[in-house]
Amino acid sequence: MLIVDLPQDSYEIAIAPNSLGQLGSKMKQLKIGKKVLVVSNPEIFGYYGDTCLKSLENAGFETCTHLIPPGEEHKHLQSIQQVYDTALANQIERSSTFVALGGGVVGDMTGFAAATWLRGVNFVQVPTSLLAIVDASVGGKTGVNHPQGKNLIGAFYQPKLVAIDPTLLTTLPPREFRAGIAEVIKYGVIWDEDLFTKLEHTERLDSLEYISDELLETMITRSCQAKADVVSQDEKEAGLRAILNYGHTIGHGVESLTNYKQFVHGEAVAIGMVAAGKIALEMGMWTKEEAQRQDNLIAKAGLPTDIPLELTTEAILETIKSDKKVKAGKARFILPTAIGKATISDRVTPEIIKKALSF
Image (cartoon, rainbow, N blue to C red; front, top):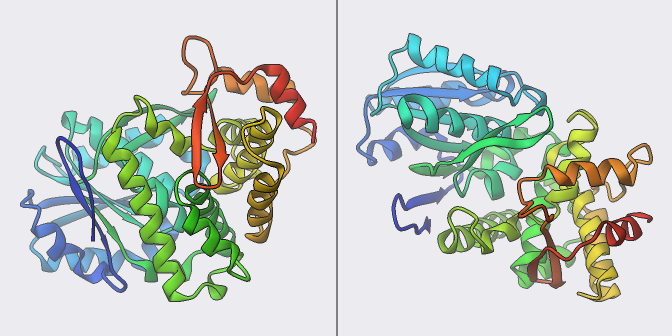
């Protein structure tokens, strides 16, 4: 059990195999209202919907459901409007709870809907993808995309509980598993050198079948602990929390320029980490050997490392201008200074980016 320790609204990250069936009893301890809206996508709900609803109903909750089509292209305000319609039809009250049963897209959207319905209802995360488990479900960032950029519309809104059942990963497609590994590698680079070394010493990272139960538990626990540590110190990204965006500045640009269809989020982050590593190398912030260790680990996980040839550096630079981390007109990059350490820099000029991206 981990705790995200905040001045207000601290909450538990409960990690236990085969625990989805106990979700209802876990939520009962939160002393919340009886009505629960479970938001999911059709595929995930097909696997786990019955178990989730049964668990909630056995604990005395009244349930209703709303399904969102899978994919980043549905992460927009019209989809949120449809969640509101379901909430209204089922008389969801301020004491009620939205439960996100799904990956990062479902979690982000459900959280944003919960933050804004009746000015805020209870919210519980039940992540089903590795990326959501180790990253998206913790920390309270919620939101949807704008046509001009990723997650430009959103709110900081903390869940009441993050309930993680690692056994749900058995139905995760291999590509989505690798996407989650990208975020685990991110934590190794920016925060946890020991985690990074453990990943280096693992023969294969490209599929769940090669990951021991012990290593999977380590990856989940240490990644969640890293995020909990950072968020506890900086809930709303006034400073330190920005390091969690390592690889995301250029990664988000790659996603939006390819209309969210060519890459899943973790793949774009992997490309962004390689690019950020080259920028850090160009600026003399870390060594060639460290950059190579990062890139080798990303490649070992079966993740892409190159920006598509059809995306020009000028187009990438244009997307960076609308990135959420821009401050006083200056793009802020998260750059590694060693394996396990990172810093925030606004000294990255377009010339440095062009030189680094020329690879």
